[in-house]
Length: 351
Ligand SMILES: Cc1cc2nc3c(=O)[nH]c(=O)nc-3n(C[C@H](O)[C@H](O)[C@H](O)COP(=O)(O)O)c2cc1C
Image (cartoon, rainbow, N blue to C red; front, side, top):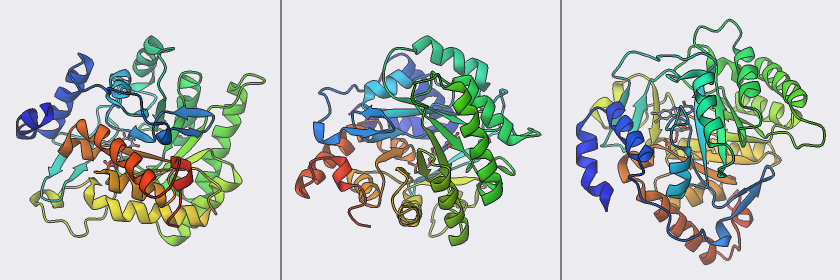
């Protein structure tokens, strides 16, 4: 496999440089392509969208919407651009992405480096009409006076172009951002976004789905509060989870780096929070499971714990793009083995 040949090279260079090289390769079309259409058992109907399969590229990989079409061609059922902030932002000083090979994890403290609304909008406009489900993950500038207003700007900027929106209030690398998960600020933020959305939606059109992405580092009370707001406000979905600040059980020398931890060490925690949230909302809010998906088994575990869709990022760092086809093959097999005709039938089967 191509990735087996290039991985030693990619892992020999700085993680952020390896990411730039990967984006460059995707831009010029050097990547595997999906051969056959996905099996019908993998199709998911959700939010008024038809996902060919439940596996999506998580936010942060294609922050600036440079390669959404390549990611779809590679076999992802959907992809999420961003996080995008209103104004361009450089992020934290480098180095700021660290591999933890012994733990098959990554720690990042990027701090929302991105090209800003105008540049990302230009790229999404240039590909409009090409099909494929492309969500836009929106955030707030680090030096913003009114973070909630930044999210409203994001919604307005990308309305009509985004297949769905993700409200990212869970990055650990922007001071104060996670505070938006508390009950009152969250209720205010969601209220403002839903009001803005109503104004942006033409009469007779369906509103663009609004999803909220949460952290895995929450107390039971915090989780119950978020669940209550999401049910009351009827948000379309919740993505669980972003990276963690916890460092339990790590062995790698890079474990002491500051930032958010992703990959295999995040799997248990994020899957537990996913299941807890599914129970707390009595499964009334569709969920997207993300965190440590590295195989068909871990993807299937997210689904049976309550996720209608699954996303991944760090798994690709260690296993390469072939992982996408491998997970989809294994998922279809697991559904058949357990007597489910569709992903939807398996959602929450183990709750
Ligand atoms: C380098 C890096 C950058 C990320 N940037 C973002 C981001 O901009 N917005 C966001 O919502 N999540 C971001 N994430 C979090 C991922 O979308 C995902 O929630 C997390 O990594 C857990 O999934 P994984 O274990 O499959 O990587 C980032 C993750 C990594 C590793």
